[in-house]
Length: 87
Image 1 (cartoon, rainbow, N blue to C red):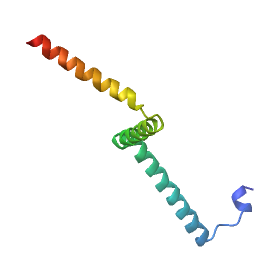
Image 2 (cartoon, rainbow, N blue to C red; image 1 turned 180 degrees about the vertical axis):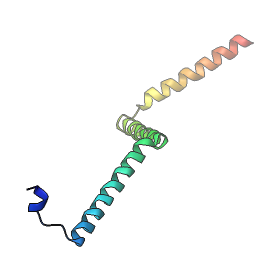
Image 3 (spheres, rainbow, N blue to C red; image 1 turned 180 degrees about the horizontal axis):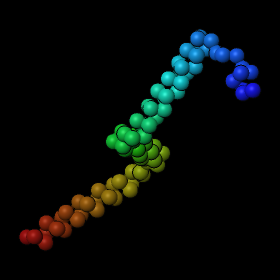
């Protein structure tokens, strides 16, 4: 005897429930595959992640004020030297 003869046939309601579950799983699979295939959206997501990480890094390590002032003085000094040589 085969195994199908031992098991009772599923009812219409059971078959419908199984079909509904299969459709749900198939829909989720299709969505997952579509998301993986959307390279542009995945790239945008990676850019956003990088932006967030960069903002967090800047927020957790503020630049000391004397360092900013020294940089500004250096830039002004370079501009004055270059202008003096052009005269």
